[in-house]
Amino acid sequence: MAERTRVVLKSGKDQSLRRFHPWVFSGAIKKIDGPSREGELVDVYDNQNEFLASGHYQQGSIAVRVISFKPVETDQPFWDQKIANAWSLRAKLGLVANPQTNVFRWVNAEGDGMPGLIVDYYGGVAVIQMHSIGMHRNLDAIVESLKRAAGDRLHTIYNRSESTLPDKPGITGKSGFLLGNRERGEVLENGYRFNVNWVEGQKTGFFIDQRENRKLVGEYSTGRKVLNMFGYTGGFSIYGMGGGADLVHSVDSSGKAIDLTRKHAELNFPGDARHEAFAEDAFRYFKNMKESYDLIILDPPAFAKHQNVLNNALQGYKRLNQRAFEAIAPGGILFTFSCSQAVSRENFRKSVFVAAANARRKARILHQLSQPPDHPVSIFHLEGEYLKGLVMEVE
Ligand code: SAH
Picture 1 (cartoon, rainbow, N blue to C red):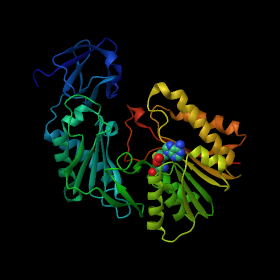
Picture 2: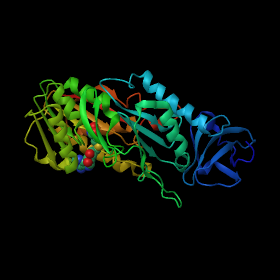
Picture 3: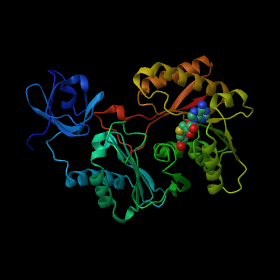
Picture 4: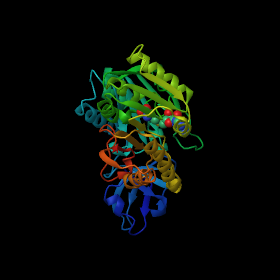
């Protein structure tokens, strides 16, 4: 392993790596010995020349994303092992060959020891989303490993990294089919049917991370009037109907999302008049709303993509939740979520607390929700715990 570029850290900046945190920030670097090419595999040393980790170099605030805390070569067997490990965890979770659910996250970046790589699985289709040049440079090997790990459970691979890879010169081939050419398909989640378009849909096509929280909504829906706010393709709505809701209203500002929601309602509950969908802004809907709901779901898009807009994001959560507390019927159940990585569980809870206080409504927390186990979080990298939810009973 001679002559690999060495990244040497400033004195005292080695602690987080020793605790297996997978990022090296540019400010921690004392010097770089050797060429520092975008996406290249480099070795990280402490100030005393002790080896700490190998990872992908990239210019920017996160300068190295660690892929191993032992010296490694990123050859085909290396990727085979990593991807196979990720697949076998999903098998252990009962998600592979499950007759009720064929949608899951196969690779969850840091949570699977592969910073910069997301792979979602849609019943035979792998959708890749890369966030780092290092992963992009290893695309061919990763694709090969996906095929080897899944065997005949994989017929299509689509790379969807156009919007997630940083803009750097010479980086081409960010999106496109790498196996097969199917653009959309029907998938099953807990027995419910959804159409997913992995080429055009949001993220990789579907919000897989809400699977278990949707199930819980189903359990609380019996005999309730449900409002699914920020519904996207209506995941929560379908579970609400399945759970025996009296009525389910889905709201999203995107007309396309509302069309898909109507389709999904028809697909799962043909001719069922309990469901209605509205293409409207959430705040406007709250303002003009006529119905009284006793189960409300708030699942807005990430309000804070970066730490520096954190305060605005917390204000946003407060305002939104306040509207819901003001509107919800006595004894109602509120499911409220934040998927902003920059917003901590504590801060999110505080925003919701201020919202309830402002609305003069008493609320009790019944559940504290998170992401499902196919979105694992490294204990050394709690930033990976991005999805936070509260279920409250509102007096
Ligand atoms: N709950 C969904 C995922 C929600 S993603 C699921 O389970 O699949 C967030 C959604 O909020 C997107 O579909 C987006 O179109 C919608 N959205 C964004 N801003 C909005 C606004 N101001 N009012 C209503 N919907 C909005």
